[in-house]
Image 1 (cartoon, rainbow, N blue to C red):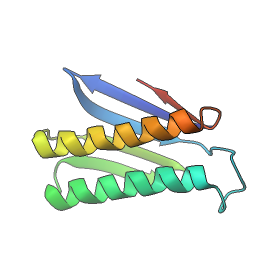
Image 2: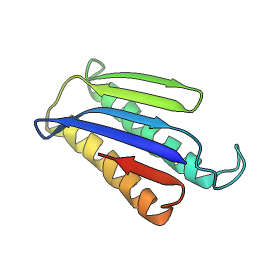
Image 3: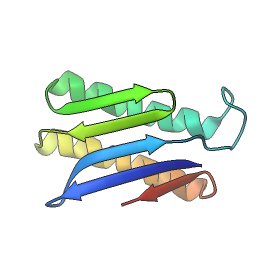
Image 4: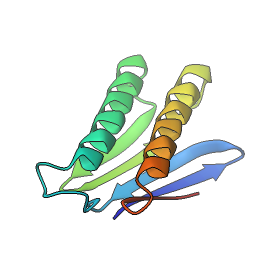
Length: 101
């Protein structure tokens, strides 16, 4: 199961941790893992392109940690959009993705 931990402070998302494997299919053929990877990579790339100092992140071997260090309308919208997409995926695959807020 993929576990997604989301931490907020003053109604702003400050930290996201995504870990695990969905178990939907074999590693390398798993559409749930691929979807989560695509959502996260697209969001990280957009935030870094917009403001390279707004995000601290590590991505290694099935673990993604994101610390949002700067907030404005665009960054918060990108982060909330990512969370909405992950929520949708979690609703479609509840046995494979769990979000903890």
